[in-house]
Image 1 (spheres, rainbow, N blue to C red):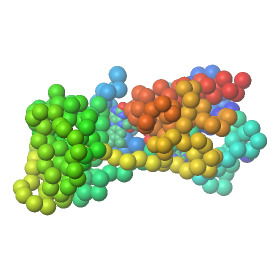
Image 2: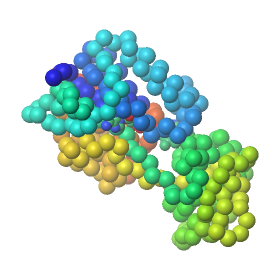
Image 3: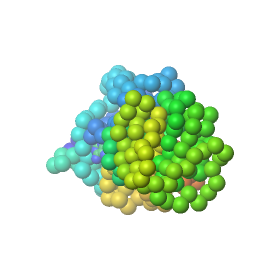
Image 4: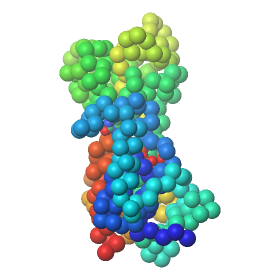
Length: 292
Ligand SMILES: Cc1cc2nc3c(=O)[nH]c(=O)nc-3n(C[C@H](O)[C@H](O)[C@H](O)COP(=O)(O)OP(=O)(O)OC[C@H]3O[C@@H](n4cnc5c(N)ncnc54)[C@H](O)[C@@H]3O)c2cc1C
């Protein structure tokens, strides 16, 4: 069985940074990456200082190049099937192969489920977005839609200075709240979307279709990997792993970072490339301290 100081599971921003942090202090660290990233649908990432507009794949390639400079860091493109404790060690399974480590950083991210509308998933990450900080400026000066009542509370105000016009499409639901002045509401059931020259055409069960430059949706998300459940880690109501401010989970030696984890004081992760990387750094530094 191969043995390491630490295993990092996940090669997104959280896992890449956690691995770099452990490599910087010459810990024998193995990063394992199954190659499924939350921002896979997006061609470019934004709101990432020095990388505003960089394709996510370029960012990851640059991060792996950084890691290649450290002899104690190993990267494997494989899928972890299980994680278990063996006394005070962690045993990570890659199919039939077992890897042992004194600690682990889980950075396996989450998976989004989108509103079930024909054509919507194909446009997610470009014309359809869930975060105005990531995709908002790209719709500047255009008609921006908000699908569903979930985002109707905060998105009109947030997107207001970007859009020329905003419409909330309630998709048959009751809005149940007042909107800022000037925000239009359409209540008919949305039947589908397709790409158009302006952005997207939205069709409805009744009445004419509408053109938008961009459409915001709310997603639900779940753990991408089963390890929190396998290890019996304490979860937040969001379904993310509960960590303290140092990225420690309820199990000693098991740290977590990125979108899959957050402190109990937050309702959900502050999901972004930089916050994921920052939490990866903190979780790895506190794991290095634990290993002492
Ligand atoms: C469409 C979209 C666009 C976005 N755009 C932006 C943006 O412009 N700017 C921004 O800051 N944020 C953006 N985000 C958010 C950002 O992508 C996430 O917050 C960030 O990627 C989270 O990083 P992470 O490392 O936690 O998870 P991820 O990047 O999802 O990485 C998870 C890692 O875990 C690995 N993994 C999972 N299970 C296993 C397993 N069993 N074995 C081995 N490896 C495993 C995966 O392969 C992957 O390497 C966007 C999100 C979406 C959905």
